[in-house]
Length: 488
Image 1 (tube, one colour):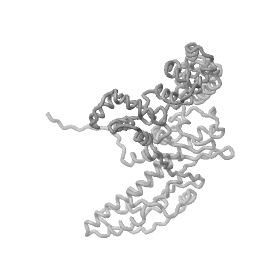
Image 2: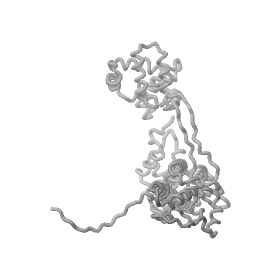
Image 3: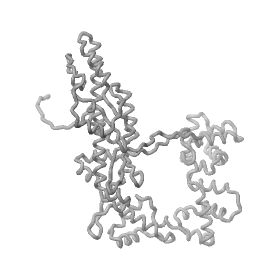
Image 4: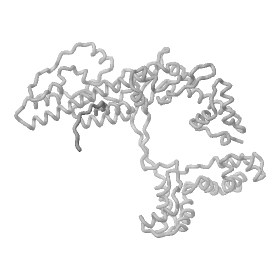
């Protein structure tokens, strides 16, 4: 049975403008420029100002009293004044994104042309003495190689694909034969391998030499690969009854081999490399840390005066429905342009307040450039200083870089948790990682330190850390376990 009743419910919804502002905040410089260009193309009421003012000029403008210009009242069936903004001076509907001290960064992408691995291999196999059907199979195998030059797919799957998609009915033995006798014979050596072991073997076997080190290296790769990868050097020495120096020479030959033979080729005919454009510029002068926005690539925007005039003309004509529709369209575009300029100003203000808070918090680090000076800092610390929400701070630092006296810095690298040392002081986990890396770099490579030994050494330095935490930090630093760090 249907019933009708009243219900009171609290809710919160984000307006489309708020969603777009959040997206603008999280864009880095290059993405912001692309977004700006797109908006300029889509909204003719938004334009680049002909006269570009500096921040100082706009700051001076804030203290100046502006007279209303062209402030005619237009009588229409709808409120046009809301969209004309004649009551507002021009400087309030313009966005100056320039800083007088901004550095000039070149943001053009670098385009480089190069031959792909697949084109290079196909050219070679077509010059081979191979039948037409076998050539199609070889080309299909080449097409299934990954960017490193490996064949990761099962040969049986390739046989099935050839039958369904190419109409070529063959056997697993035939595909194996073409793979081993044609594809794997191509340059670069090691291409078409199904495993790292096979890749290295294909390379070492092409080194026709009676050299003892090369022969031993080939035998180790073929018969003692597990012992090699686990660095069980003593086991290999006992197996071959050789001196440590002989093994050293063999390992040197293996180190010359490439585990990714396709790495020197482009995965596409054209590769686009984009430079990192810092979003912030941080300068240190006389003990002062000065943060600035690198917004030189963003032009000064304003609401189109021409569109205001067009709206004024159309709005006077109450008789024509077409003119009324045109006026409504122009109103929408003018409103969008006004809001977009406000959104950019708010974006810039949010970014500037955030970087100011970060610089204030990590002043010692920016002055010294020493990672040991980094204070423990989480998103909430900056949110408390700025008054912004934690999610807003997260969007600001996401994908953002700063140009500092110590080089280009990824903002997220400044954030870290804290641990308490033996003196009761809170220290950044980055400082502990730095000490851990330092200890491992100085260890005896013949007898690398285990995680338990690292716990003892760091404890002696005042850092009381559990073994599992050491293991976690070591993995984050891409440092292998002690057994895999062993060297002869």
